Image (cartoon, rainbow, N blue to C red; front, side, top):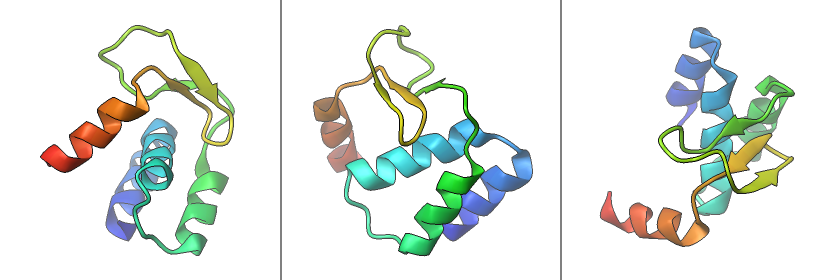
Amino acid sequence: MVKVVSYAERMGNTAIVKRLGYLIESLNIDVDAELLSKMLGMISQGMSALDLTRSRKGTYNTRWNLLLNISRETLEESRWSL
């Protein structure tokens, strides 16, 4: 996971970091607390959509500055199909 965050950081794409952080926490993926803290420090103020292919309707997660436009159930289902 550290490598993925490092790549996102080099690309300068904070939306990727937001999405990763949210997914890590939502799906209870075990990562170092220090890495999550670093990721939170990297995100921008603007809101980004969790899923770019869906409409911009949903709820907001202010911790990760994300528009949650995909249900938690869909995320859970996707987790097991990977």
